[in-house]
Amino acid sequence: MFCPNCGSQLPDGAGFCSNCGYSITGAAAARAPKQSNLSIEIIKRAFQVVLKKPFRLWGLSLLCGLLSLIAYFLGGPVLAIGFCVSMVLNLGMEWIYLDGYRGEEVGSNQLFEPFKNFWKSFAAMGWRELWLLLWGMIPFAGFVFLVIKTYSYLLTPFILREGEHTPQDALKESIRRTNGYKGKMFLTDLLICLCIFVPALVLGLLGLIPYVGIIFTIIYVLFMLVVAIFAPLFLGLVRAAWYEEITNAAEE
Image 1: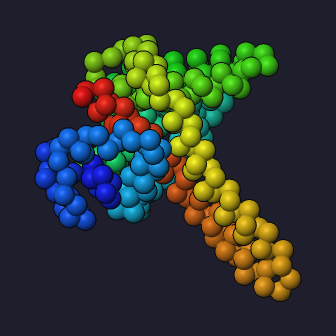
Image 2: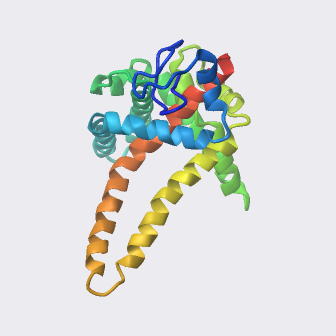
């Protein structure tokens, strides 16, 4: 459960927050995620995790990207090999995001956890990508369907980790659990995009000012560098946050 005041993760049944000292009850904490500002709460919690373990999680995210590039390089003309390995690596990274969001220790060995059952992991991720491709190929309205289905299938990697679902069932379960949440998920991503776009636009315009504009241009470049480095990590934690929120809500 989470503190309704600062969003810190707390043990179930805690009477007060160990971070901010806020007095809570189990019932109040359970109701907190159901507030209308759910999207903002999700963003705030993900941001708090980034502040706690920025370099560990970012390093693992970078390692996943580098290993994926190596897999493509070693695969040579057989791009399918690199594609398969990359999807399984990304599945492992999704699980790391979940552990990081839960406040658990994370390490590079977790990145290879899905390789213990490689074919099931690949089948689940490949099945999801195949359906997204098919939805995206629908004439005219393909992009709209692609966006909707992307959120419908969002929980598939996390559900697969529960261990009791086949690749097909994991996809169907994700569709079921995200019912009623897709709009909130879209709003969350929209808010994140606005938090990036608005400052970038303002800094870009200020950079046009003669003489002092160079200062804002440098700030703009540094800002975009930080976004490029940490955006994938932050979005991964947001996905993990949605899985936790939706799963906990279903269990109440």
